[in-house]
Image (cartoon, rainbow, N blue to C red; front, side):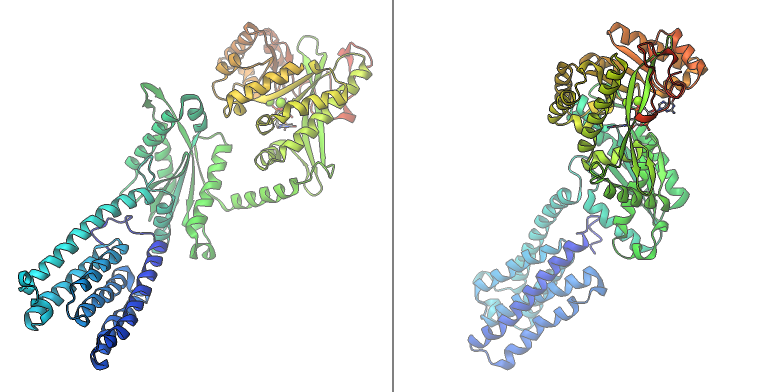
Length: 614
Ligand code: C2E
Ligand code: MG
Ligand code: MG
């Protein structure tokens, strides 16, 4: 259709079909009305019938889809305008019957294409001009001012031209709004889906590169949505600049972009993804400041679709595959592209099954809490424990938290699970404290989802009350990532938890966003240095400087420091030299079940069970 309309400005197939159906119904209906009308106006049947057939006949050509949009719409509009001509004929040129023609021009505009207007113009020339000249008829010369049939033709043709120009302007506007993303101007999901399906139908090979910005929420939350919008616009522009002629860039939603690569796959698609990521990574100047954003990329190639998937809805499938690849890229730390492989589909199915099993996991008693000691670096005395969740799955065995906590968070199950962990852990700490005759502290991890609701304060207060554990022996561990959302609400809830007497620790410190500013603005008591820094300590160099400055900073803010993941004497020595107070790691104890933890009977635990305390 419409060579004058650039590719991609076409109506989506589904929309076109439904409009075409409406036009066909209208055309058929008016053809049928013309028959009784003609008879009623006193015309003999042999005169009316051929005229009705003239209106109906083009519909036969408009029905089959195989002739394409241009032919189908031309046939349907031929019927529409033929009906106008017949009406004028049957009414003896009644001037009002010309209104029908003007209405039909509006109906033909539904196709959002030049072809139907061209058909209208052709019929006007034929009806008024040619027939008017060679078959003089009262219709064409009854009007004094318009005795020349070509005058009538020019009048109607002028109207069609004006209408088509007006419609063209409104199509553009409409298309701009319904097929383009208003913020960035690139294709929206609807149009991208269309382009994708068409490219798949061509069968020359199609690939999709999905790009999801890393940490964009933080940009929005911390710098404001105006800066966020600016970033999205800039990214869209860069992707557009980096796309080849046949590629189509679109925004699916939020910070998710996609590029459809027509006729590309395999290596080419991987190279394109790397190119797009490099473009996104280039520093941006927004609001007078330099800002760097990165993205995670997922590549999916039509070669990975099996025949059944490729047939219908292949585009959706391809996007889903690319989405799975993006998730892998994110899980691997972002700023990279991953190409979809079938195993990822399997992993997604696995996760879906695990998610089903997650419902009711607390009631079925499948969860366990393991405990890992926190020790004093000087002397190795056990200071307390961290509660670490485990799932004893009936078929899969012991499932580590990293495999199911994210699922529990996205499904909301974490609220019930987290409450259970908290209650179990504080009870255990209260029991140990009684047995030991000294306060044993317990660290419990809180998820962002738990902290997003006000109930968390009552849940913690209730657990403390029921267990009898003094609040100061409870440390709630939160990660920096959860502070990005509703910062003010979260900070307020943390403050209330702290008023209960609990201590707040920032877990995995140094891996999140803008750590230092959080430390100043949040009610925090403890910083847990992420094990990635501790692991690098043995090599000396920048990791040592980094840990030294975290310890120094914490001290200046009056905070305690726990080093996570201490595995070697060398690391422990380096931490001691840096004056770090507490440590946790396999060097001292692995997480074990409560039954396996044996504490010394005295308040001096330096000679405790080797399973937990060195
Ligand atoms: P985390 O809170 O940072 O916990 C420390 C993780 O490091 C634990 O992994 C622990 O087993 C591991 N670890 C301790 N020492 C060493 C070491 O020396 N070397 C190495 N390589 N690893 C060590 P785990 O138990 O798999 O837990 C992983 C994460 O899952 C936790 O990280 C925490 O973020 C989350 N998690 C665990 N339990 C819960 C829970 O009850 N609720 C929530 N929301 N999250 C939990
Ligand atoms: Mg923790
Ligand atoms: Mg940690």
